[in-house]
Picture 1 (cartoon, one colour):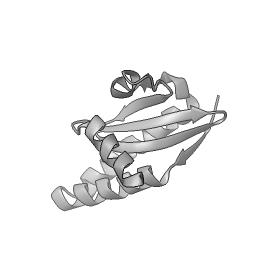
Picture 2 (tube, one colour):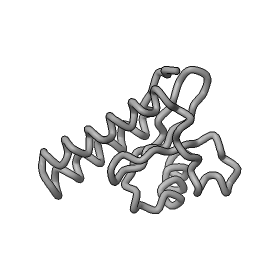
Picture 3 (cartoon, helix red, strand yellow):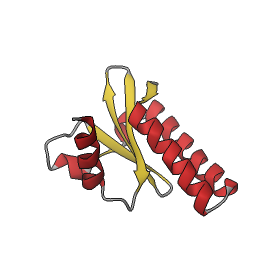
Picture 4 (cartoon, rainbow, N blue to C red):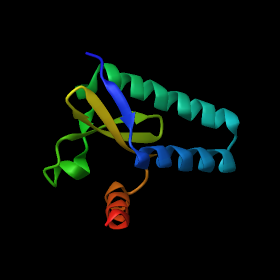
Length: 109
């Protein structure tokens, strides 16, 4: 099985923010390594979309259609619909996911 993978605008913005953060606090090589891990994770999603685990914070809310894979210290949250995987979020695993999602929901209201 091979799906199309689409980064939603929110995930694109997450990637830009992550890149800026890593380049500001570390260096280009660290960004290349991190981005490589993200690309590898996206390839896993493309070929094995249901291998990702249901997001625990969202499972408690009965939102079991959202899955996650880890890419180094980053979490990629996505949803599979038909033949497409939609990437919703890319964030550091140490971030408070519930708080991040709540802020995102508030901004979109």
